[in-house]
Structure formats: structure tokens, C-alpha cells
Length: 104
Image 1: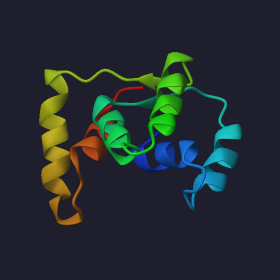
Image 2: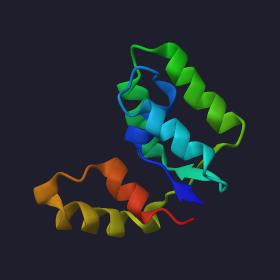
Image 3: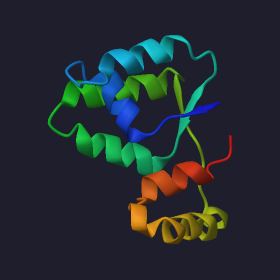
Image 4: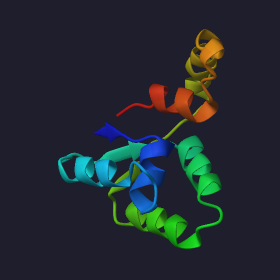
């Protein structure tokens, strides 16, 4: 499984993003499922709030199984908290910390 964060996911569905071509090309070379977590999906939907068609494209990728939503539960919280504390000087947000903790 290949983990995908908000930035590349937004770039995939937003044609005018300056990383769109690179992300689309990279996706063609990925032959494993993509995985992400709910905090990343929340961030993506926020970033695409003014582009409903792009939001819908993300949902379509999830519904078709191109992207899998990986589970997080209370057992993951201590590690997520630890990552956020460890990298506080680099502003690691919840989505990033949760993604680093996801099991795939």
C-alpha cells in the first residue's frame, strides 16, 4: 500500500495545481492501492471546498477502491500525540501524524 497525503491528493484532482502533472504521472506508476486516513480526507475536502467537482472526484476514487480509508482508533492516539509533540517545531498537523501512524 502507498500512503497518500492531502497535498498530492488535491493535486491529482485539481487540474490547475502546479503539481497536478507530476502527481498524475506518478499515480500511473503506482500498482498498489493508495491508503489514507480520515484526518487527511477532512483536510482534502476543506482545501477543495470551493471546487465541488474536485471533491466529488475524491469521493469517486474512494468508492472505486483507488483510495482506501485506513482505520484509526483509540490505540493509535498515543503514537499520534507523540509524533505531534516530537515534531512540534515543524508544525506536524493531525493529518500528517495520523498518516504516519496508519497501519498498512
